[in-house]
Length: 279
Image (cartoon, rainbow, N blue to C red; front, side):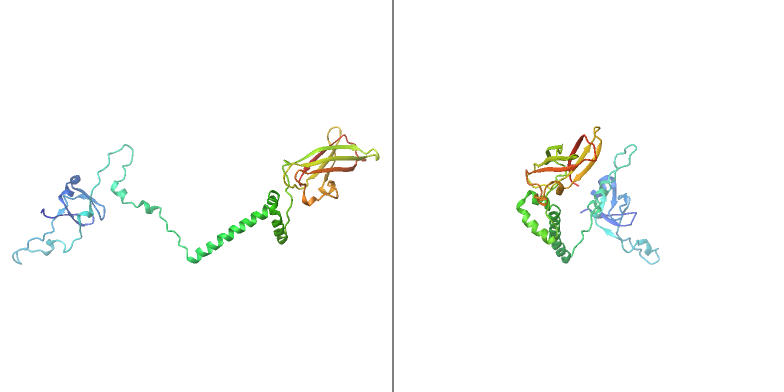
């Protein structure tokens, strides 16, 4: 059995038990597993055998020459072969030692401690989430109640009862883009029985499959140069007639006949304009 060999790190003076195979690798260049110093393990070999004591007290015996009474002894597994230097690259920094890279705890660089919630907090969140979801649904129902009642008529009675308790109302939808409302026919004629009186007839038709709110009418008289002479805005109650249920809206596919008498005795006009709009 080969005798044990020891080498000492010049950086931290830690003593390592080494094997000939370790010292043979990379010409004895090793790295201290304690302070990471790279040194020549062959040149730093030491012997732990105690020196021979002199025969007598007067033969120059020096206790300090025996070295320190104790040493820090590490096993051979704590001593690592020094990494071979990488080939030089022009105008570039040499890459880090592979052994050093393996020792960096990359997993811990971005590690974060997960907050720990108590059972009471978990119970609170568990109870609050359904309540918040229910509150959101109620808010959506309130905001879109008119559209829901228009597109799903079977839901209108329930929504109406809820609105009776909440103090709101279900109203017909307004066709702001005027995609489902049109003026099918209109005419303006002088009343032969009354001088200066004009008779406006028109028909407003709904092309929607659900009730629509009655729009307002903008009636304008123009002169020969198409300039405005007089303009008047007519609310649904002004043109729909006394028998129409304005709050219920225009029925799906319904038609609203219009006949109005307009006093134009103080104006001179050559034409007219008629528009639908929602205020």
